[in-house]
Image 1 (spheres, rainbow, N blue to C red):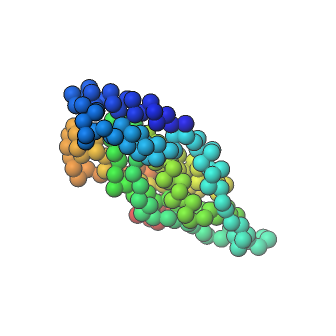
Image 2 (image 1 turned 30 degrees about the vertical axis):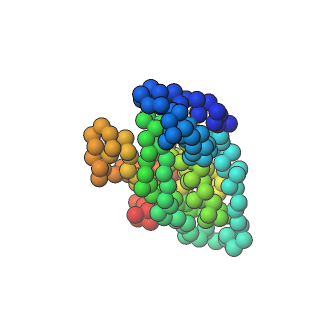
Image 3 (image 1 turned 135 degrees about the vertical axis):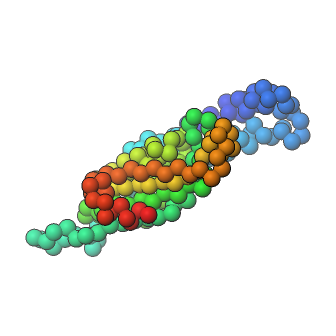
Length: 193
């Protein structure tokens, strides 16, 4: 669990290290506010991928079955432009204006659409790398749906690149985690654009 008291003390120390007075009017409650914010934005650190899969494992089988002797119907589920943010583990800097597209081919059951967005949110509530966010989302969606045909694409700005260092404010990062049919069939990748 996240130790908010320890975070408060460390934030106080950071303020002192910056040469400011944590007791001055504008900063008096800052350590408490930051600790409360961190408890929310890093809530995903309290859970493993397996626990997140259990948390959002609400699937539906009705109408998904194939008739005996028939091939699996050509179905695909895509949820696009899921708005997210996260914090980079290298600088604890914000990854923002993040959009994820999540797709899978159902294998006898589908997950509730809002659960896909909830999985994405929880995965982002960790110190992360954009590449790992896509991998974690794909792992969890695959575990819940039982499908190996999963794809996750993510686009985001990274404040560690836009606000510090090289300061390229319009540089956007794109990552893709393609599995199963999405990896071998380029026509399926068109659904992710």
